[in-house]
Length: 149
Image (cartoon, rainbow, N blue to C red; front, side, top):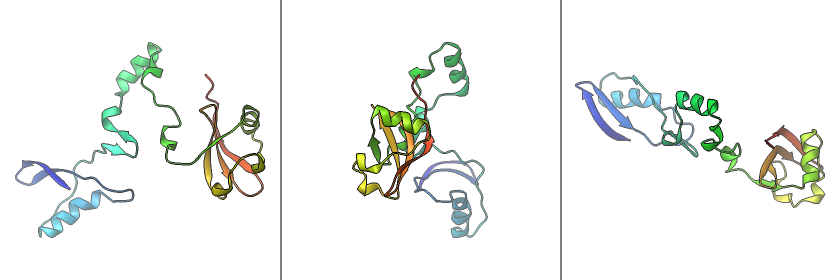
């Protein structure tokens, strides 16, 4: 918790770096209680969440212009970006087709023993194909992506 500035006699700006699950709005109340007074948040601005930072964002108006100028791919992150922290499974082109059709795969073809009971991102040639659930008998598609455009 860092004090950024005092904006008036009874108003302050803070910067907080916290973990997932922290109820940030309660901080205003808790700080006020420690000071034997009352308090609440008047604004809350998330500047970072996981891999995403506010400095990497695009204003909605600019995003609209990019679409009209067919430049949206210049600044968009791959759909797999938020999945960087889950396990990945490289699959064949043949199995990618099966997953896209909603079919399950045999786990015998892949080394998935350490992923039993987990959800994994399945990729064909670095292209996200599906999120799959792996068990002893099958690799089942949970969410399929058609990103070949």
